[in-house]
Amino acid sequence: MIKNITSSDITLAKAYFTILVETAIKKTTISYGDLVSLSKERYTDDKEIAGGIATKAGRRLEVLRDHTDLFDLADISCLVVNAGTQEAGDAYHLKEDVRLLREEVYQTLWLDYFTSIHKALDMTRIEYGLSKDRRED
Image (cartoon, rainbow, N blue to C red):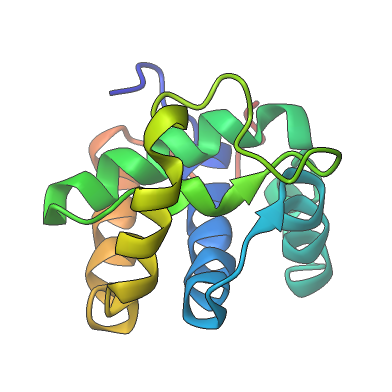
């Protein structure tokens, strides 16, 4: 579990989750850069999302993973790949199991959990006393 979760972590985890669910439904992968760019395109008015960068996406995916783990779901962050290699990043904690994990992710009915995971992320924001009005990195 990540310590010192910020409002930006929660906001970006929610945005990334939405995009990753779509990616899972398509049974494909997405690069870190495309994940960040797509979130910025979709949420143009959100300052926290505008500040998202690919090099910090892993942190936000870890926050998301902490919340999908609450529902014993496969690690949807395994769909995020390095743009150059199209493979899981070197820092990905389950790199050797990524193919099996992706199949599990593709078989998960993510829409059944979508609202619950968003609510869990919102509860973490409340629990940590995080205001969406503050810009935190």
